Image (cartoon, rainbow, N blue to C red):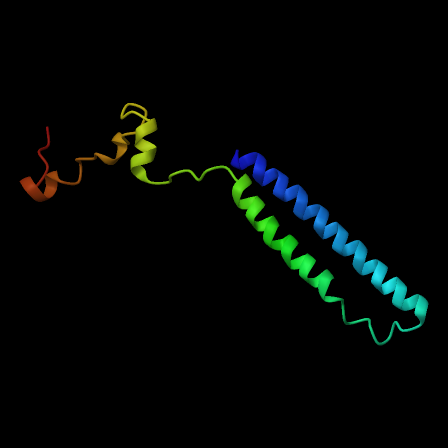
Length: 110
């Protein structure tokens, strides 16, 4: 339900943003046709600005609803999927050659 609602909100916000872009183009071309392009080039009508921000807000809600659920990244969640046999025990770390000299003095030569 939330996925389809999110997808429809994304479509609606994209269409609203395209409409705002077309309205901006139309507004500037009308000012240019009237010869007043210098005075109105930096100012958009409020309805276009509100439509852009409303489209952005609806887009953010749509992306939030359309996104898949987040996955856990904890060690416990990873170990739920694996067994201890699948994990590498790294036997190369268990080296005992370095302890004999300290515990027993010198090596026994045979």
